[in-house]
Image (cartoon, rainbow, N blue to C red; front, side, top):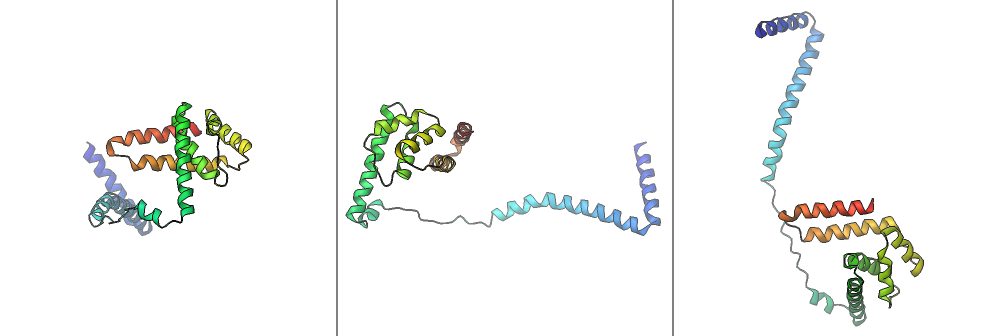
Length: 190
């Protein structure tokens, strides 16, 4: 029954298009486009997969010799780096003592980025600002230390630093942990 109905339908379509060449050419163009589109749709993943075989991984040497780098600096530059490292350790110790270990990277990032010209001697007072949410933190630091930290710029930088740090230690087994961290950061911002 189905075959007779399909045959009858095909005969009617053929009869309608056999008499009008313009309809016939449009119909064949539509059918041809659909068939070509489907063929390309199925062949594109195969072509992409095949192209992966011809790609070579880059051979990049990223070895960094810290001792050689430090030896090229002037004594003043070496003293500045030592002072920054000492301040970073002092911030980490103070944040841990204040129970704010999870805020350490944020505190160090702000200090290294915005306190270039002036050093802090009271790290406990500095750490006290980190009990607030991020927006209030930035406002209070701007007020207390006469800084000009833009909230949006800081958040973008902070997300980049955190994600970059996590990507460096990520493995396939830890992918879900990284995705959870990114989601957690975005939820805390929004």
